[in-house]
Length: 171
Length: 262
Image 1 (tube, rainbow over the protein chains, first blue to last red):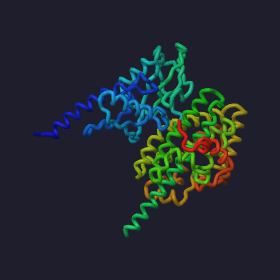
Image 2 (spheres, rainbow over the protein chains, first blue to last red; image 1 turned 90 degrees about the vertical axis):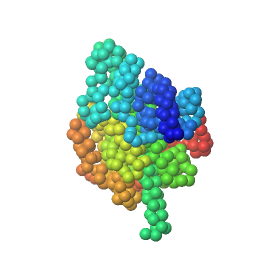
Image 3 (cartoon, rainbow over the protein chains, first blue to last red; image 1 turned 180 degrees about the vertical axis):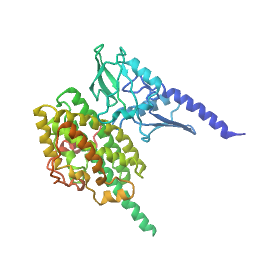
Image 4 (cartoon, rainbow over the protein chains, first blue to last red; image 1 turned 30 degrees about the horizontal axis):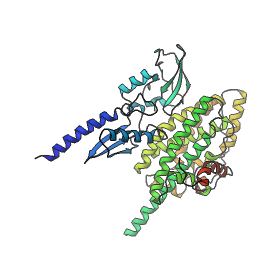
């Protein structure tokens, strides 16, 4: 009997189920995104009935980090995985490049402009990226402040439809 | 090498990394505390939010560094004990970080000087042989790079702005310049850690810092003072008269109600 294979098949099934559960855990500050959309789930391991989830913080001081760990444990408990632990891993650091394309669409539909370009945009005195308005698509927008309502956002204004909006800043 | 010598060698490194972590953590914590004082007092609500956001990044960096320091020490002290239950002489932050905020120009210029220094420091530390320090620094690099852009833009806006804004930031420059030299000093701890490939030699940061300052000052119509005389003492816990007041406010709750949580 090939028990090793049996175990790994069972684990693969669990990992897939856990992934589905995590896809339903919202980010506390941007509830339209799940922790999977945000790209902060690094790894899921199942060993002998214990589940370990590696999560990376978006920002060093992100106040949502502890809440996210708690929400993940709660969701896994409800899903039948009561023995789950969440590890915080730092390396490699999270960047906005890790937000999934589905996540970017959800952000836009929610009224938050998704990050434009890669992380190299943060050069001193580089040209600011063109950020289209998430409501009217106009590219005639202006940066109001590089810092916004949460650590991950900047504040913009659309000159065409006059709406202020959040931009998920590039990091 | 005898086992006892090896053990002793390892413990020296461990103590050095502990000291280093606390210094880095203190720089981040004290910077965060000063930035937080601007909350509710900034010239505009956007700047208020900006300083609060930057303070949050620094407090996050401080938490990670203090937690690591606590583990290295192995005496059960956590991040809160490091921030709130150590005395002035135990803090190893640079003097620049603890100076009072003054006006907006002084705070912006201080943040700019600090960010232009800590960015190449964290970039170097990201290559450290100590994986934990490398990981903390790798995260911080991205945040500090974004912050540096913000303060650099404001230095240009004020320096190349009105007569009043130019005067304010020029006055701040004269006052702050005497605290810049300390940033690039190295003591035995930092020399040993640099040799071991764990820490960054502070003297090696001067070139990158000069480039950033010269680039921004040229755009800001500001001139570097010629005088390089400077004050020092932060690394060894000898602080300015302002530090005690800063800690009194920062630590009052834990000092009054030790161990209090909510």
